[in-house]
Length: 448
Image (cartoon, rainbow, N blue to C red; front, side, top):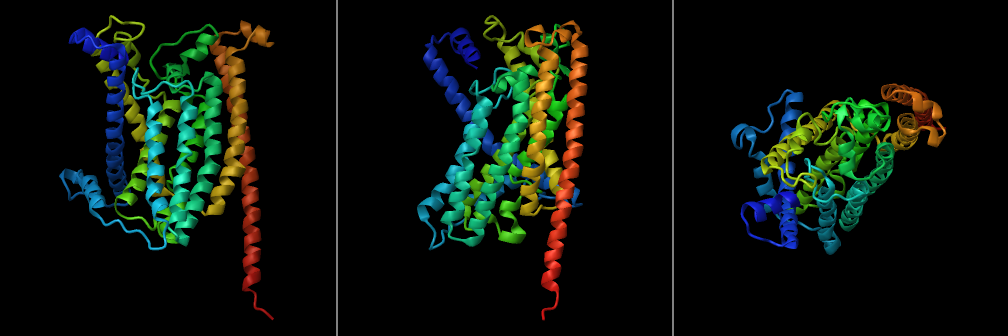
């Protein structure tokens, strides 16, 4: 971003701006764009979901406001702005007011490390992935504030469910990403995207063993056993983090009205709604970055090689635009595909009970992600280690053989672990059901 702005302002226009002013202009432009992108994505996602769910249920969905109902989200936004803000008499007014802001603010900060295209990341932190999830956890504080300040039993129960769910499923989400971080050796989201160049096999995996593969941007982690299991576990955890069906227990309308949002109306309710959809967008975005190559795709690297950059200051700004546009297209295509999967799951599966939610996370998902970390260690050993690490026999193997052995061993370990954990989990659930049935039968027996 800085190189392109400097070339545009000082090269093309010849304004002679100092470096600090160019950097400041770049930061202001990026912040403005991101603050516009968040609500636009939320408006699009609401329309996208309502139309898709309607088709699944043999309905039409929004179709009255604007062509094909495209302006319905705008109408909903206007309604939120004009509705009366009602605060319960017994509520803690200041905490009730601050809670939606505490929930929304972290989602905006999370945009800071999302790479949209080549050279199009707002801040390239070397701990970007850690920053993303550290900031996301702050939202749990806002949810608890909302439930407590409302002085409503339904709201408090929903807030407690939300916090327990977020804490429980952040663990498998982070453990899923840890296996990918072990392979890449970096927490930078830019490095994670760059690692996934290649074709099916990552160019970096083969390069470590002295091999090569075309740089087509298709060496995604999801094509490996380690990445596939991590992607599935992360996506399930993301459904719980974003309170999507079947994990929408914190705001289960059939049980606790609207959970922690019960006593909110007007734009305060709108802020919770905004935060929820923006969080789902960001979770899909980070899943696309880590497992689907982010902006990587055929043609992007080739175009960016001709653009202005640190390694090519004499490049053309036209190729910055072309590479950026193609990269953003690939990135958003992957994000929208993942969100459609969320919608599909919502239309197909019922809501879980809270005990099923906790059991699945702690007794099945977390052990499975821990096994995947061992698979990641096997992958690293097979593709990179040699005589220096005590595996001199691997040094004589070809790069594709080493990749194939890593694929087979890690895949076998993950399949065995899945089958074993499935049997153990099914047995524990069957035993729990039996005990529940016995307790119910004892209550129904006639007394006396």
